[in-house]
Every structure is written in C-alpha cells, then in structure tokens.
Amino acid sequence: MTAFLVVLGLASFQSNKVEATKINPASWGANKVYTTPKKTRGTWYYKDPDEKKVKKFKITAHTLNGLKLYKALKGKTADKFANKLIKADKKSGYKLANKVGESMWSAYPVKWHKIAGFEADGWLAGSGDGYFFILVKKTVKGKKVNALRIDEGYKNSFFAYGYKNKNLVK
Image 1: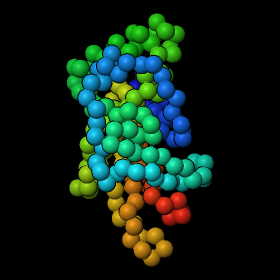
Image 2: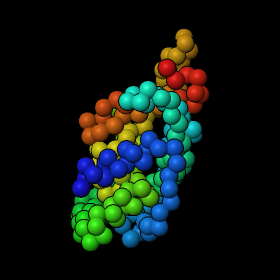
Image 3: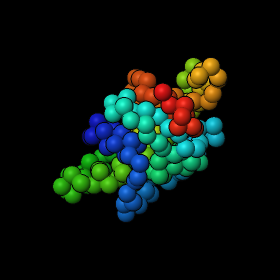
C-alpha cells in the first residue's frame, strides 16, 4: 500500500495540473495544514532526469503543485487512518486510494547538511518516501544562485535542481 501511494504521489508531483477530487481531508486525519519554509516557495523549473524535459512546479505556503499539504500523521494515529484507507479502498474496488493521494499530501520539516527544508509525499504513505526540498546555492554560468535541491525516496537520493529562472536549468 505504501509503495502504491508513493508512486501515485510521484506522478502527481511531476504533472503540471492537479485534478480536484471530492475528498474530505479531515475524514483521513488531515486536520493541520503544513506551512512550507518561505525560501522554498515560488515557481521552480527543473530538468526531469528521465524525460530530459524542462518542467515546472509551484510551492506556496500550503501547497505543492496545487496539492494541499497537511502535517504528517505519526504513530498510532497514522496506523489508524492507513488501516481505514486500506479497508475502504478494498471496498471501492481499489479506486479510493488514488483519489486520496491525488487530493492531498503529507509534509514535515527535514534537514540536509544542517539546511532546513521539507519533505512531501502521498497522504498516509509514511515518512521518507516522497520528495525533499532544500534551498542551496549553486554556481551556474559563473554566478552563485539559489537552487532548490530535490531529492526523492527513503534514502534521500538526488533527483534534480530547481531554479526560479527557466534559463538556468542545464
């Protein structure tokens, strides 16, 4: 189930548009909105390493590419709602988890080399399986510029660098 939600989350992150669904976030434990670090907000451009295409996404105070971010659930609370989703998903013919994953993400603060950022992943997917966003400095064309380091997966593997200017994407 966790792997399924992670794959679903990755697809939602990489798409340019998010389709609205009629899921009540509170019914799945999403009660507290997550606030992203100010330095990570804005429209970012990156080169998708698989497709070799420049793509864009947007981080606002409470959304990632249009998906609302909620504080991640922990421990027994997370288990309770994950079990509820598994049971309900089975009854719906395995269509409900898609709707839940496409309508909201969980997020929490992280640090990478003592630099604060955040992680976001599919709702109820568990920690460490999504994308990490950390603002760093990169030298591009001889100048130091802000870049958003994007890592993925539970091992925090490098995915891409995002830039505020499309022309900085290599």
